[in-house]
Image (tube, rainbow, N blue to C red; front, side, top):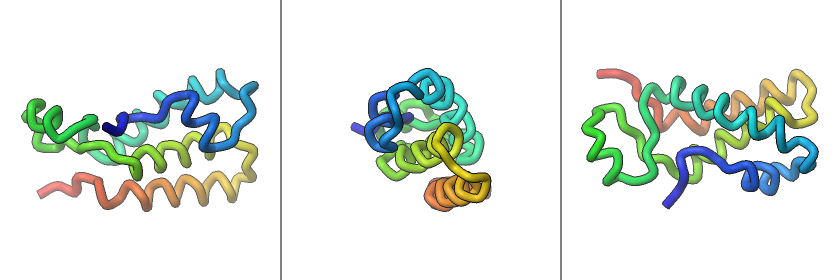
Length: 105
């Protein structure tokens, strides 16, 4: 079952970040998660059962694509990027999230 946000270990491994950045990544994870939920305009859940039980019409079930988008946002924040590279990573992350976004009725 996918998580709703990446773990520190997953971020360091998948982004190939130096363990010295652990504190920065730890601080970035909740920031990026909040940004993701705000962009998606709905709460994230680990499973369809949890989403259904929430009775929230905007509930979204997290998957690997949502986690990957959050990892890109983390990399844009803490990775060694130029301003252009960070903007491109953010744009790619939002493109990945767009298909999950609640667009209203």
